[in-house]
Structures are given as C-alpha cells and as structure tokens.
Length: 412
Ligand code: CTP
Image (cartoon, rainbow, N blue to C red):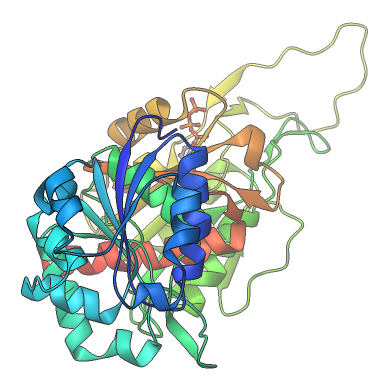
C-alpha cells in the first residue's frame, strides 16, 4: 500500500512512544522507507537502538552532528520525504510547531520542511484541553497540519478522557490518506471532546431493509440487519442530538433515547422521513428496496402450474428526495453506498447524482449482517478510508465527524 513512500517520522517524548515501534513495524511491512528523528525526551521512553532495528535505518537526534550535517543536512532530511509524521506529538512539540521554534533537530526539521505534516497528539487530557494547546492546534490546522486523534481513553496517569494517541492502525490509515493528497477532510475530527457535540441538533436517520409486499405473506427484501444505522442513531442521541430513527423491519431493540418509527415499505419510509423533517442532519443507512411489485396481490397467491410473473415499479429514492429538497433541506445529507465492486468510483457517482454532502461507502460482502465494517468517507472535496472497526465504533466516530462538519458549515 505504501510501497516506495518515504516517511520522516519524528518521535516525541511521551509514554505513547512505545506504540510508535508498532507503527514503524507496520509502515515497513507496507513497503514504506523511514528516516526517524527522536527528541531528547523521546529517548527516555524508547531507545534509539530499538527504533533503529525496526526502522532499518539510522536514527537522527542531534542538530549539530557533524557527520549527519556533511552526509545529509537537516534541510535535506526534512525534504527527502513524501510525508512528515509526528507521533506522539506532545503538547511541547505542538507548541513549538505553532510558534515556529527551532531549538533541536526535531523542531528545526518541522520548520524547514515543505512537506505535509501529520501529527498524532498524545498527552494528559488537561494538557490537551488547556486553552494554550487548543490555540496551538487551531493554528496548526490553519497552517495545513493534519491531525489524527487524540482519542478518548484511559490515560497512563489514571485519568480518563481525550489525549490518548490513536492506535498504530488508525495512524497508518491516516498516513495512507494523507499520502493520497486528499487533505480536504480533516482525518479524524477532534471535536466530540466536548461532551455533547450534537446538543441542540436534530438528526433523522433511516435504517434496516424495507419489505415490499408481493401478497399478504411474501415480500421482496434484503439482508440488511440495521445494525449500523441503529448504532449511529444511538451514538447521535448519546452526543446530545434529538434523534428520529425510521426503521424498516429488523430484529433489533429500539435504541435508548431515540424516537423510533417502524415502517415496512419504501413508500412508508419516505412518508415517515418527510414527517420527521426538518432536521440539521439526515443520514440514510437503510437498504431501501429499489423496486416494488407494481400491484401486490390482495390474497395469498396460490401455487399454480406456472410460476407467477410480477411487474416491478421503481421505488422513490429517499436519500435523493431529501438531498434535493428546495425547502428546509437538512444542512448535512449523508448517504451510505452498499457496493460489491469499484466501491470508491460508484460511491463518488452516488454522491454526485443524489446530491448529498457525504457518502459512507462500504463493501457489502464484508459488512452486511456482520459486527464489523470497513468504510471510506467521500465528500465533494476529498475522501478518506477508515480501518476495520466495530459498527458501534464507526457510529461513534461518524457522529463526531458529522458534528465537526456541521460546525465547520455553521462557522463558514
Ligand atoms: N437509498 C434511498 N432510497 C432508495 C435507494 C437508496 O434512500 N430507494 C439510499 C440508501 O439509504 C443509501 C444510498 O441511498 O444511503 C445508497 O443506497 P444503495 O443501495 O447503495 O444505492 P442505490 O441508490 O440503490 O443504487 P444501486 O442499487 O444501483 O447501487
């Protein structure tokens, strides 16, 4: 995946530095080549020897090393890379970067480089939430620096909250996205650090399959379980949103804190959606049946000598109908794309012709009916792939993502 890509990895001095060894291993496995720079503090947490053994190269740490200066030079080192990655990005390193300080090799390289920089912050939650760090992160974002994480979690210091460095697999996927040059979408938004990022917002979501009757006992349906949609509804309610879930027939409990409307057919689903609008966000996760039997039989069709023939009619496209509303269109209209091949290309096409703001694309062979999913997010300005996660984890991240998108639109 990263064959031939050159990464300059700056390791900051934090307890999360141990996770970087795993990141280095994975980067090498993917075919990337690495130059590694360690700050003085980083060497307190991992040894240059273990970093050098895993990275397969030299570890740089001294701004004034004569040999390094004659052989490579710090300016050259900073530019002989496709991407610069800082992990863990400590509060101190972020502050230096935001101020343009250059008092050691790591900060000098970060100032001298003309390449994209991706940072994976890691620090105590009070440090992350401190106004100074918030300011620095905002400055860096404005400067085009990309962020992955930090995540909520248990801290080495025994507290719980935002500040934990993203896992190596997540950083790896952020690196792959950044290398595609698709930097318009922030990699993993860092809001949602606020307890209820969707407080005061209204979200309407469809989930599950629809059943289109053939006769009173038979129907056209599909394999959708509704798990992803229900998980998003639950996560949005947890994030403070007022949520209406329009659910097709599923074997799931109604999510807590969500007002759930049960429907069967695509036509009922559309009517329920229209009744639930207006909203700030609409998310279409339902696997709406594309066709219905034009005239469903009023009585059970009896087995006859010849199998019956059905004329099919096209169902309304609920997502497109919401996205193309003239009056009170939700600020954010999000669709899902269930594909079995050419996933990104088909998803982009859906984004365009349905007129929505974001498409979450997945491979149905890997997602339908399962606990886990692997998705890619596509918007008119870029795309990014998320690693395989449980559907409830995807839901939580997506909700944070949507909160950030909505905030950006409100600020703009
Ligand atoms: N969708 C919808 N109403 C429909 C069909 C789809 O609201 N009648 C929504 C789904 O909820 C999803 C998105 O459109 O958010 C894409 O659904 P998908 O089944 O992947 O695509 P289709 O539009 O049905 O196209 P195709 O079957 O050709 O892939």
